Amino acid sequence: MLEVARETYPEVDFREGHLEALPVDDASCDVVTSALAVCHAPDLDVVFEEFARVLRPGGTLVVSDPHPSTVTLGGVAGFRDPDADPTEGFTMPFVPNLHHPMHTYVNAAVAAGLEIVECREPTFPDSGLEANPAYAVLPDAVRQAFGGLPFVVVWRMRKPG
Ligand SMILES: C[S@@+](CC[C@H](N)C(=O)[O-])C[C@H]1O[C@@H](n2cnc3c(N)ncnc32)[C@H](O)[C@@H]1O
Image (cartoon, rainbow, N blue to C red):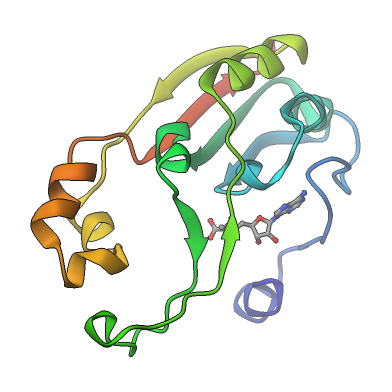
């Protein structure tokens, strides 16, 4: 991802690091975004402490993650071969998502001194249902099981100041 990003935007300073120790100075960011990554970190307290550390006072944090209910139902970061035919059987490498209940995001944010401005829980779009490997053989069951359920959680927070 970094290779592609650096080729596409050579003027941007991309840095590799860990959520638990961001390679960024204290109070140096107007905006911090994290997309679908916090679900891989075991301790949200440490991660939100880092987000708060690098934000300047008045700065904004936007975090998306797979919704905890999706994770409970077995949602993973899967890498399916787009040419594989699910009706013929296939294997799918995946990275597991960790289950972080909603209160753990709230408590981690509060402990880090962040204000929660907004929380959204968008439901599965049709494309999300159709991407489920089971959809190829049991489309009605997949719609019945996942349709209308929250797919991701998106938080908007602010560092006071
Ligand atoms: C599902 S991908 C999302 C990638 C990208 N943000 C996007 O939305 O397309 C999850 C990413 O989290 C990264 N990741 C997992 N644990 C991490 C950690 N502790 N610190 C930093 N990155 C981590 C993985 O390397 C991977 O790139």
